[in-house]
Length: 401
Image (cartoon, rainbow, N blue to C red; front, side, top):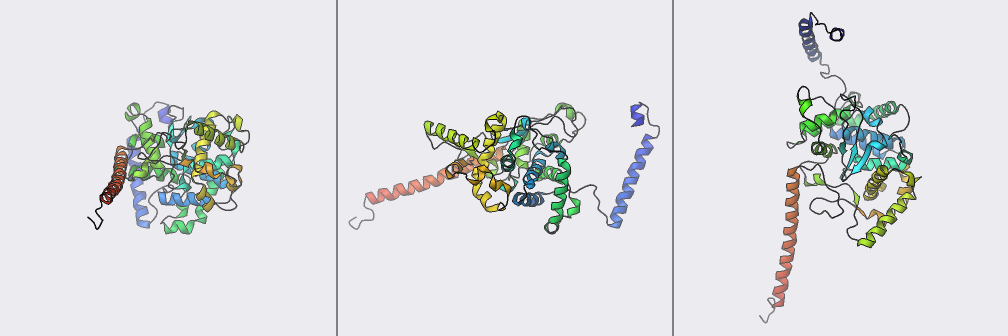
């Protein structure tokens, strides 16, 4: 560093490089001979371990674990360092079409705000305990004060220290379960999720997202000329975000929508009345709801749809002493509002279904095949009924014939 700052060539640079490589080889051989751990730092966390950690935080009765569950899923889905997630502001978040969006002023490798996003995150209605949108819903309704204008997403100081302590405590509590998965709890840390999700997204299928989009989202340097010619674009990042939500890219349901309110069964007047009643009911149960900024209110509505869609699952799986059960929104949620929430796919979408993003072409082809199979099944049933009806009309089963 001193030589570089002084713009003086280091006289023994080549010899030093050879020496460092030699020492590295010697240390690796010594570790191999002594049976020591070959890798440095904390291990990566695979999806199975991630789901174990997330489910325990999800089922916990501790109010703080609602916050830690959200931080953990943000760390996984955004592929950012936990510190970046903890410094997020409400004004830098939004919900567009079928996904959450996040922007950051700086991140690892980009400290001057020259690459800030937006980064896209998706719901996973198939696995509520790792669904980021549902986690946001539980957090907003338990800590509604964060919805006020200008508020940070996570209030308080030293949140990273408390989150790190809670995570290591949980690793210790689950050490036997982790051991059964072949993982030593001492080898896990707050960065393990970020390491694991990158590996999962890149290797989950032979049909993976663009490697450039993956590297840019994680904040990894591309190096050399690539950083001058390859930039972030929504399409690639959406593909990474949908995969990071742990949706199966080899299954047609990879194209699932987030839970949303569907009014397609109502006429125009009924739709207006139902929407107004829903928003009025929700505002009555949120403190100072009229002063919630527009982008935050839209986010709350989309997240509230997830609560409605997963209401029975939440009633069954949340701890009886969970603070979320006692929120004004959850404890007396009307059945008619619950029934408005649904999820759709490309083959059964309605005019109210949000645009589905981040879906690769092969999944769309699988979806078209699914739609065709459904039409063939319907055609077979209708054709059979038509033939039977015509035969009965003509008396084919009659003894007179």
